[in-house]
Length: 419
Image 1 (tube, rainbow, N blue to C red):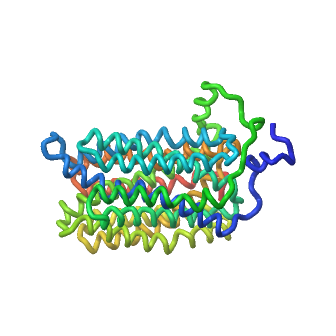
Image 2 (cartoon, helix red, strand yellow):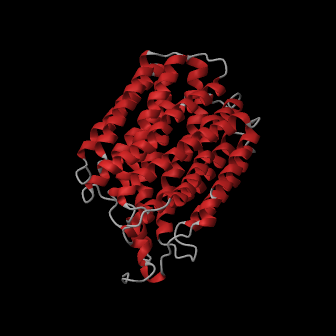
Image 3 (cartoon, rainbow, N blue to C red):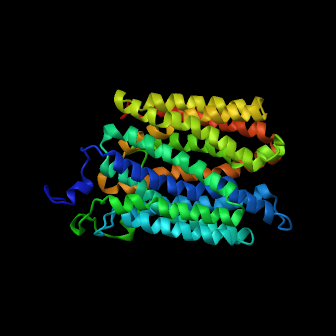
C-alpha cells in the first residue's frame, strides 16, 4: 500500500496541480507524431499499395484494403490495453509511461520502413500489424499521462490540444504521403516525423515513477482478468465506451473508402489530391472547435451536452452525403463533420478520464476504452464492403453511418455520474 509522503504516491494520487503550456505542447506533439504514423498509411499509402497489388491477386482493391486494415485493427484491439497495463506496472527510473513512448515510436518508425518494402498483400498486412502493435504501445502511454498529471477541471482543455494535435497528425500524415513523391518516400517521411516528434516530451519532461512496493503482485490470472471491466459494476464506463464506439464506427465508415468514393462515384480527377483537400477542410473546422469545446466544457463543468450535440451534428453531415453526392457536397460534409468531431474529440476524452475506476489501472483502463477507437476499424470493413458492393452502394453506406452516429449521441444520456 502506498504510504503518504512517499514519492511514488504522486503516480497514484488524483492530480491537483495544473500542468503548464510546455508540458501540454510537448505531449500534444508526441500524440500528433503517432497519428502521422497511422494516417499517412490509412489515408493514402495502404490504398495505393492495394491498387498496385490487386491485379492478379484474385482480390479487388477494396477487399484487399479491407483485409489489411481489418487485420491491423485486430492487433490494435489487443495492443492498446496490453501496453497500457504494462505501463501501469513499469517501475523504470524513467517513469511508467516514457519507456513505452520511446520504444513504441522507435518500433513504429522501423515498422513503417518495413511496410514501404511490401511486395504483396501478406507482407503489407504483416507490416501494418507491426505498425499497429508498436504505435499502440506509445499511444497507450501518451493517453495515460493525462489522468496521471492533469486535474479533472483542466482535462477538457488538454484534451482539446491533444485533439488538435491528432487532426494535425492526420492532415500531416496525409500531406506527407501525398507530396513525398511515391509510396516508399511517403513511408520514410512518416517514419521520420513519428520518431522525431516524441523527442521534446521524453527529453524535457520527467515522468512520475512507481516504486516496486506500489506495484500489485503479479499473476497471469489476475493480469488477464483485469482487462474485463464489468458494465454492471461500472455502468458509466460501459455507456461511455459504447458512445465512443458508435461515434468512431460512424466516422470510420465515412473515411474507409473515401479515396474510392472520389474516384469511382464522384469521378474526381485527382482522388489523391481530393482526399488531401477534404482532410484539410475537415482539419480546419475541427481545429476551430476542438480546443474551444474543451475549454468551454471545463468552464461550465459539463460534458454530456457537448458530446450529444456534436454527435447529432456529425450524423446530420453524414446523412447529407446520401442525398448530395457531389464534390461541393463532400466539401460541406467534411467541414460540418470537423465542427462536430472537434467538440466530440476533446470533451469525450475528458468524460472518459472522469469515469475511470482507479488510479493504479489508468493505462490499462484507458487502453480498454481506446478499443472503442480501434474496434470500428475491424467492424467498418465488415459492414462497408458488402454495403458498397451489394446493398446499395455509397448512398446506403452513408445513411447507415449517420444512424450509427446518432445512436451514439443519444446513448450518452445514460451516463449518470458525469453532468
